[in-house]
Amino acid sequence: MLRRLGIREVHILLLLIALWTVALVLLRPHVRVQLLVWLLGLVPILVMLLRYSVRQD
Image 1 (cartoon, rainbow, N blue to C red):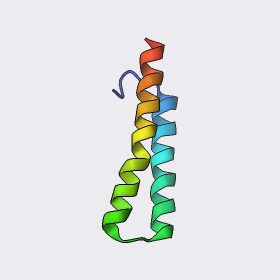
Image 2: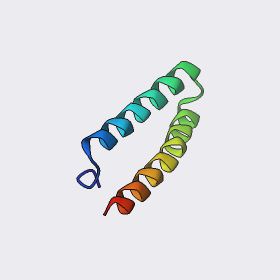
Image 3: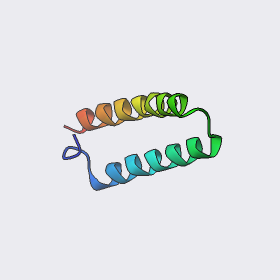
Image 4: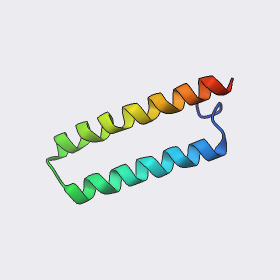
């Protein structure tokens, strides 16, 4: 998947993941809830990137 994406898209993805992680660390809910919310937050981002990469082909 990352090969299809350009360098810019990969940087955006990493930045979003980093910001998401920092936000959750600052919120500090229970660890299980934190992981669940983190994964749920990543799903739409990954779907958006997949759609974008398919559109580019």
